[in-house]
Amino acid sequence: MTDAPADRDHGVAYLAQSLLSDPARLRGYLGQAPMTDAALWAAYALHRLTGDADGTRAVYEALGRPRVEVDGLDEELRGAIVHEYADRCERRSDPRWRVEALCTDPPVRPDEEGQLHRVMAALTAAGPVPEPPVPCGEHNHQGGGTYHVIGWGESEVWVSTLGRFVTGAATDVAARNALASAGFRWIDETTGAIRVTGLCVYCFGEREPVSVDTLLFYWQD
View 1 (cartoon, helix red, strand yellow):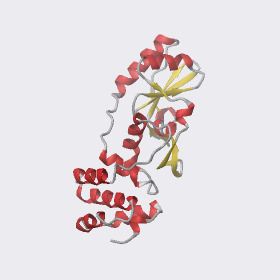
View 2 (cartoon, rainbow, N blue to C red):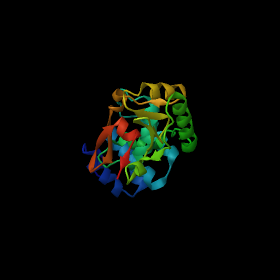
View 3 (cartoon, rainbow, N blue to C red):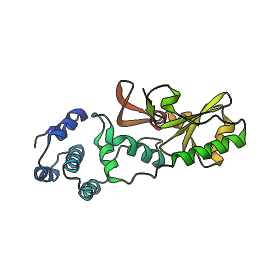
View 4 (cartoon, rainbow, N blue to C red):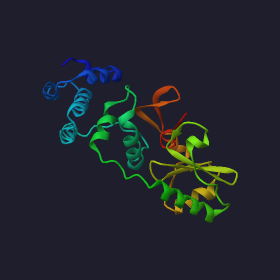
């Protein structure tokens, strides 16, 4: 083992753990890791090599379940985001996100067809008949992502595939109220603007932390 897993540059530490290949040495290193990040990288590498979920959880618990705290990010949002992005985040991400995803239960994903049907019914009852839902890739004529677009009057409603999350123009009070009554959660500008620090996600050439609205309603061409 080297000191690379303890490097404060997450990109360097990520590369170092990707090169480790001896589970026995990793287990020995866990007991003497000089800092929490180093122990997390070792646990992440050990999980990669062995698939021992119970062992990874034991390390996570022993370390006090470390995680990146983000102001305003509640557990519902956090669970949806960490289990969608942590296993494919960029190398400069904080290891706490990666290990949290390995050691926590993912939220139950909604049935997309059923969820869209409920959104359509709520919007129909509230006003003009909505247009059929369209996947974001089709709406943008290329790519794909994590939401559907529903035209409603002169505006649009976006429906996330990651949970009961919906959004639209701030002036769409009727849509917001109708969907809230149907059990959906409207992501307003304040919540959508929360930056999820430490979780670097590819977005149009950038590999940096992005906001909640970008993650819940993600599209790439």
